Image (cartoon, rainbow, N blue to C red; front, side, top):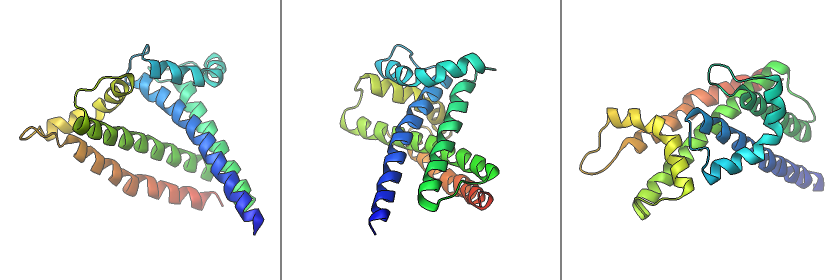
Length: 193
């Protein structure tokens, strides 16, 4: 019975450590994609904690077509290592390569969607509690969410002083988890055996 508790604790620690680092690298990639303010203190922090792994990759893999490929490669590697470690600890096996690749892609896609869900929900709460608040985190959240909220605002303009675009985007993001990420994860699980 005690081994099960240690296994759960190990999985929990792996998920926390790897999850936080994946989040940092993912935010670095997304901030670069939206050309967010590099001098923002939050951006500087993210760059500082991700540089030790990304700098060596930059020497091997340059960015092409405005895409930060070293960040993508690092995301894939770290996520794959997390999946391998958790599979080894919980089931004592390593997933087949194709299944591992599909699972890695699915988990990263889910992480991106969760980042946007979280950012939009936090922005909505801030707009209710303290509209017009300024701090480095709110600036970054706005810069990250605006590319997906802008099309929704064109589709559904504000009515009566209320902006319903975050609600539309939240529904679409949740549907994408159900209809896109879940089937990809199921495929990855089938291929990993």
